[in-house]
Amino acid sequence: KAWIDDIKLTGDSKLKDDSDNLEQYKVSLIEGEHKIKVKVPCFRMYRSGFRASDKGNATISKMKISENGKKKFNRKMQDILNAYVKAAKAGKSFSEVAVLFEKDSSCKKENKEFYNDLKKQLGSGDGYITKEVKLDNYEGKYVISGVTGVVRGTLSYDYKVTYQKEDVTVGDMNGTVDGSSQMSAEFVYKDGNYQLRTVNPGSIWYRESQ
Image 1: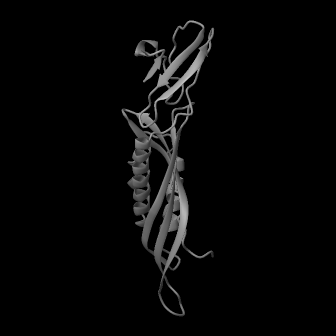
Image 2 (image 1 turned 180 degrees about the vertical axis):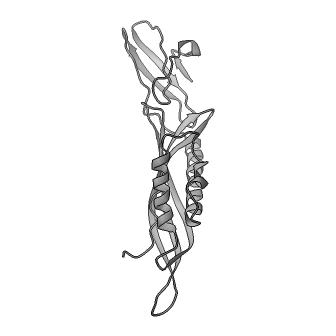
Image 3 (image 1 turned 90 degrees about the horizontal axis):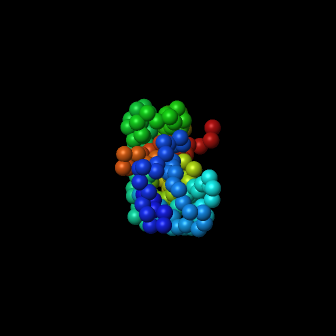
């Protein structure tokens, strides 16, 4: 929702979208200074001023996430990451997590590659068996792109992997590895909700270098 000089913009002044997830409006204004407010779900109300001129334009960017919005995105990111780790550890195919994404995502190929990398990291083999993966100490950061409307998020996290390693001299050995990583994702606002477009879950590596 947007207001110029406290007058709400309506669908009558909205232009057909020609950019990914960017709403555009065309309005007639008296040349000079005006005020604008923009409200986007999960972000703080944006208030600013701008100067109208003949055939001029303004793009609203640098909106800041609200505290409630950060909590919502943190939950989304954590749920996505845990679903990724669970499926990857079990050796499931990408289709197991594909349901998390927006319908007909244009980024399916790269999403699949990132998932398969994680599955390779957590998969048992080469004398290693992944026993348990614990995640904690999450910290998320989010920003909305003023050009595309896409919300970009990062989620830093710590991990602890418990594993079993086959050793020809002493038999099987159990061990644990602690580490830190970062997940990144992009969301688009569709049908009244933020839908997932891309995910890079980060690296969870516990095996010794070969």
